[in-house]
Image 1 (cartoon, rainbow, N blue to C red):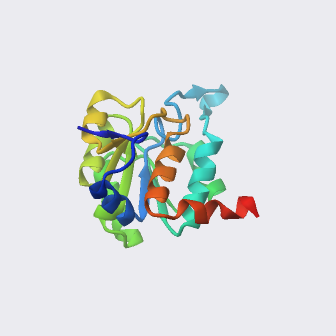
Image 2: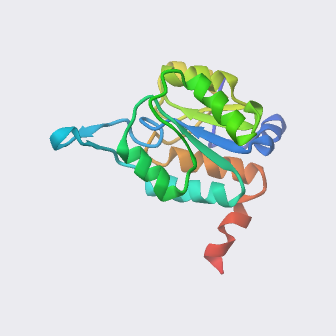
Image 3: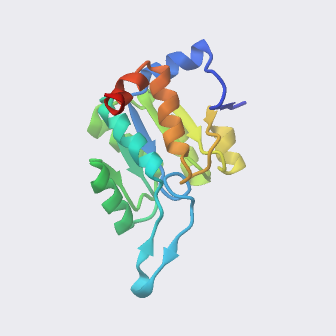
Length: 183
């Protein structure tokens, strides 16, 4: 049975948290609330959460890596990734599991040291091979059952930030990466 992020981690979970070096994130339903708005001429608009964005910057500051793994292709995703300084972006993934393996190979980070955050059945294959599969709070029942941890917050509503804080605190890095804001 998955563990909700609001609880303190067990010793076994702390061991897993300490081993995580990378995040692999779905977009629609994880970095966004899953809604897609089409404008004129087919322009696609997505809403990203700023708290998630700061969390991603803090994750990078901690020396970790991030991959975006999404089944869709979107200029908005490319722009957001560029804005955050992300170098691993996999769009139009018909097979997210293979894209996760590619990220592992390209980054040199073993699958068991990657945390995957997903929200629906399309994410389950990559969640199944990750060291730490996590579902957002409003994920499908199937994705929640495939997860070891479930965020309290929903996709696009701070769930990614919640996951980042939880892992960095488990690694003893949270205070270090936020220290600059208290100086």
